[in-house]
Length: 122
Image (cartoon, rainbow, N blue to C red; front, side, top):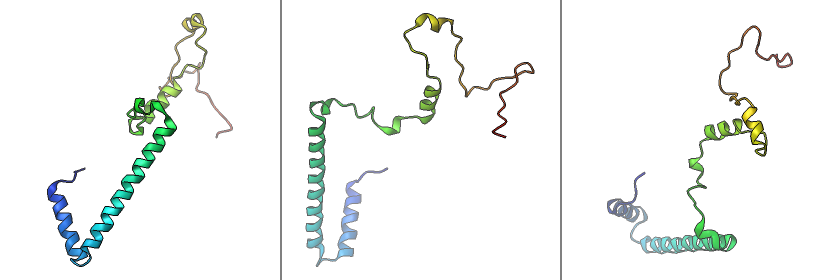
């Protein structure tokens, strides 16, 4: 994504001047300036309201941790499936319990230990 360079801004201004025409160009520039000020005022007002709602901790919020683009759904599902359901209060029982395998890892079955069968699902 490219930013606005001086060349691009000049090109946009020239195209706007041609399309709008010299008679309506001052009115269009006035409208653009007024709209820009309104949008800036709305943004400031929204930021002020958020700061008032959150309080003094607003400056201490780490916004990068709340960015939804950083979440990997595969990792979240994997961690949820591998989560230990037993309470952490009994450390001795955790040492005796066999390690939990992920349901996503393929298991091999034998004739003595056949795979589970659900006759209602077929």
